[in-house]
Image (cartoon, rainbow, N blue to C red; front, side):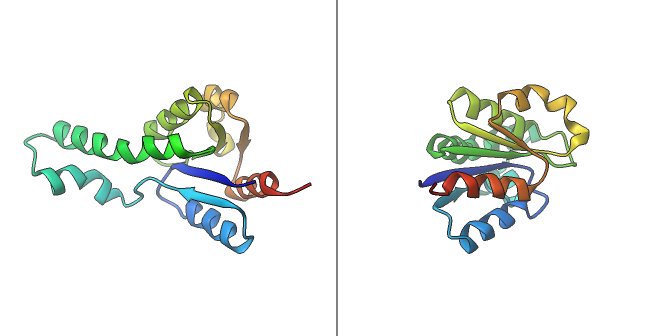
Length: 148
């Protein structure tokens, strides 16, 4: 079976690259979609395209709107949404993407460490799978694509 998988969430580690490499190495029938993971480019896209803003609120607001076009399109196209919560920052955007995926009826795989189980309990309850590491996510994706 062919899947389209959107990799959402934490951008400060190489977890996406590990998944992409595994998909290629194992020749899994998976198309990977991602948000813009270049933090500076994502933050500055509106000012770079539309011009400078007088306040950080409008800079962030306009950038979020532009970036949301990519994110919402990717979630809409995805069969499976993987959301990784890392150990830095509050990651409200990752929680938002998980909520959108659930609302759209997308299969959801959540990845996070044990020390944030409690704050993510509602998201975990809505997910089809909760992984503790990227290797488990890869194993789930591999399992889903096997012919039995």
